Image 1 (cartoon, rainbow, N blue to C red):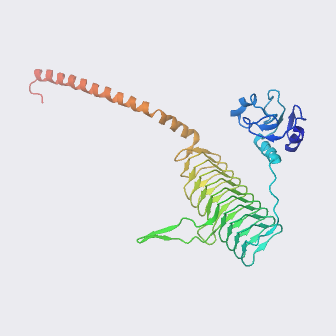
Image 2 (image 1 turned 135 degrees about the vertical axis):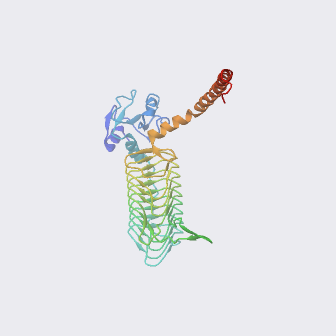
Image 3 (image 1 turned 180 degrees about the vertical axis):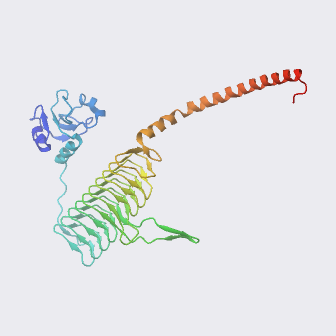
Length: 362
């Protein structure tokens, strides 16, 4: 495509030769002639001079790109994503219909253009919306509801009575509606608490590979993932959790039962939250942080237990000084012992002189 055409498609401001031919997209360090790249992180600004890309997508604050044509946009990362979409290989065209090797239960309702591939199992009283694609080896339990334009990749399990919205993507190996981890302790062991609630996945959610979302405990309860939220691989979301809208939950996050997560919350990798807490809107939880108490809105927390990031940085700085502080304390202890010894000698001499002056002193 011509650079001019790309600029028009993403609503950018073109600076330089718009007739440059673009044949691919690449990262700023890997790009070569014919590629378009982007600069979203100031950390890579020095790469502008070295990149071999033919054009660059940049923010509004960039004035020049060392002689290369560029496109100014409000959000370079979003702009680059749209360009990447233009150059992405087109997926194989799928033929609507139910493969003969799929198993469908009673009273299954299918919308228009649904694709059900071989070795899919669908239980009784299931409804599936228009243009949804279900890949091989998917299990869908009784009374499940799935919306339109949803894609369910191989080896996904969606247990009974769960609801999945429109334009949802569920990646391979994900488990939706598995039993929550609930046991009542008594003298003979641990008695399993029946998990008879459900899971609700709202519209435009994406769920990564091998992620598990447990069903709620009570009949009228639900574990809810609200619209627009994106969940990475290997995430565990326990029973009765509510995750708000447009959240980002990255790999290996664990959220314990009945936690309430606000809108636009971000969890870094390997972070987590204990159960029965509330996390407000627009909170960012840094990687490997552990949230153990309620977090008000608009906070950036880190560490374990998670604290406001500035406070945690001070704590880390103090920890780095700990060896030096221990050496200082030991030196002070040594000096105190020396002073105590000298003081003892002085007091002994004073007492001896007092005894010479007055032999009756104790």
